[in-house]
Image (cartoon, rainbow, N blue to C red; front, side, top):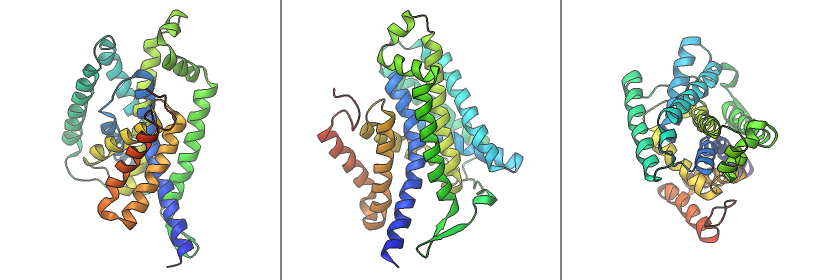
Length: 289
């Protein structure tokens, strides 16, 4: 095997993995960093996206329908959950959020099990992306190239949304001083609902995109929540750019670690997190405690 071709394909594999991790991590970053809520249900919304994508693709015959339906439905469920339950807890201890979101994980997981069963469901890759390209004489799946492009596009879209739209401005202002934003006449509760819905929708989008690679299964949630919190901790609480950098770092460690040190691939991710925390306790771009 040509070393250059191997290196290029492994790097592209890592970047495609980073795209999925970014969708997962940036949603939790918004919720965790702005609302100060430890959302244990985030991985379950990722899993829900995979199952919703499967159903939408099966009913319409189009994978692209799943990319729309999954995030929208999951985001709507997230907003309803924030409005109905979380909104009542903002004046309570942080442990209340842990218990309620953990409860949501159990409830959603059971609903998914009842509706879709326990078997893994294969989401078909779109015909236009169901092929390979050759890079330095090495085959590489077209779908993974799509993931890389989608990740870059969405990173730019989210960045522009946060920087140039009124809602993005309100989200950033709320993260800095929610009381002041409320004093200026803004309904902070609506902003928080939007943040929670967007975060859950982004997680579901990652689940839809991951489903053709890993299938839609009940095992998606536990792995996803671990990766999400690692990304938030490495990148820094509330940092969009930090979550992007962390997703890339974690993806490269996972891909190359799994190839060279398969028995220690998971440990290498935690080692990276520990090294970052030793140097920067607040994360790469987070605020120091």
